[in-house]
Image (cartoon, rainbow, N blue to C red; front, side, top):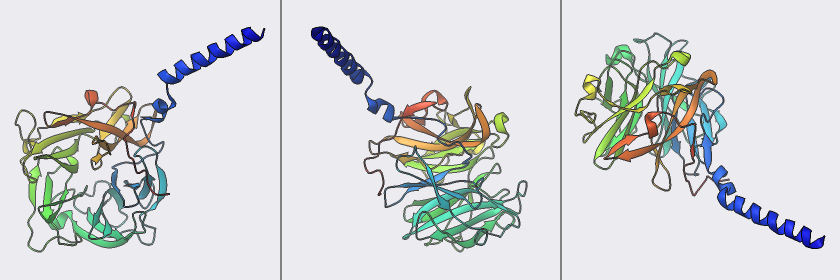
Length: 337
């Protein structure tokens, strides 16, 4: 009987060891599934702060602009709000805060934001706020411009970038993508600066990423906010110049609304667009966050994450559709405690 028990014990250990080798716990710990959020987080923007954490800001489906915090791009928690009812911007009466863009400029956190009411394409505009900490609170510095002042209909969706020692703001929504030079502190338009158009009228949600000799213009096209009927699609083009022209693989220009598709809808997800800044993990892999509607839980635009792959200096996402499950990004320093 003792020999039989010993044999059974050895056999079970052998089986468990085989199973552990084939399916180590790290395999499960190293995966995530989309969507990342159970609630709506549209139009994400993020940065990695000096404490090692990522901070994400989104259109204010959570009033006063939610600030989310994560160590790994996958697991997010609410860290606060950028504004209060008292401190929120007011330059558009009854306006909502849409599509923010977070940056670290000259030792402070600078949040560009859109302010609009639905359909207010000539009264909307872009403002700026600052904070000493990524979790806020932010101090509003007021508007940079509104549509009627700068002569660009639907002036929303800001994106900030520095290039060759100068600071620029890109923006626009289905009436052209434009850019203009900012002041040294990034808090106003540079006196005498003139806007220039760098892409056509099919796009909004600008994000520019530089890799090697190319600038990559990521935008969204289609409808963002029609629930499961949304046609939002993430697209791109590339240029050797920040100001374009940006081209697709065939050499056709984004000024003529030609592009390459990065992410389109799938059987499960639709309305895939308005991506964040591109994040490079500690293994050199590139990632983007964006939003989409989940057909299994269609309430709100959920936060999504996918890896950007590269072929012949062109970015793509596998199968051009959202992943339902994928390996996690790798970050060795997962934030201060």
